[in-house]
Length: 250
Picture 1 (tube, helix red, strand yellow):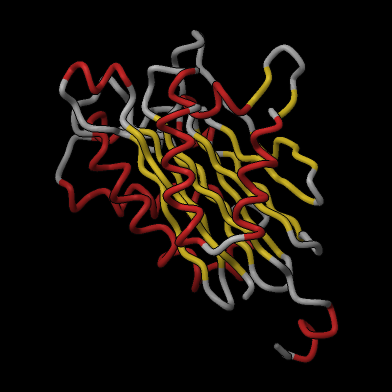
Picture 2 (cartoon, rainbow, N blue to C red):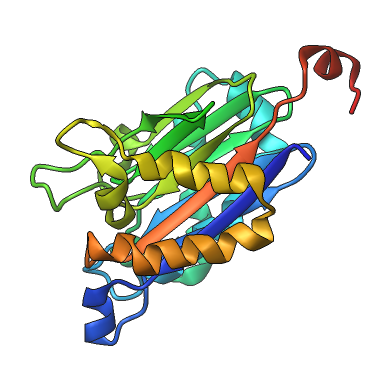
């Protein structure tokens, strides 16, 4: 198996007390030739932003897979991705400000090539051989509680796209800012040990077992660190050896 995916969301205390839905969404896909994790955090100030978040999480994997090669070869794929994401939100018939949400995604092919994008806050962590690092960190606005959104006025300047190649098995963990409060140690400026722990779950166990475990971790552990909505998307991949990539073997 090349890739495994688990994702979970949890409605934070603030929204629970207000009787409002969770505005975080997380998901993706995992197959023999493509793995993708996606996470969106809807703006708390926009009462329907969870609809935009769900739309993007549902749309992006299917849009990205057939375009991966072209986007990976493009020296600046961010404008194309942003234009397509905004077009994907049009069927909702909502004003742009009601679609405010962050976007984090990571996609990888079996030969190890990967592409990730990030606008707004939250974290993208990479875990390899038990060691964690931040692949992409949060970007806030002028104030700590401000950030950037897909349909926001400054999106063109703030969608960050990276690409590269991983040649060892490992995991990528996407976390919203609420979850990130318990997964990144601000004092030491490094990922908390829990990041590697979560990644190890998916390395050793099937997605069907890990998904409810992620939900419990959000509810019982990470919710004690933040009253915000919480979400995680965890993708584990095992790239094919180089000779298999060259000869198309399995």
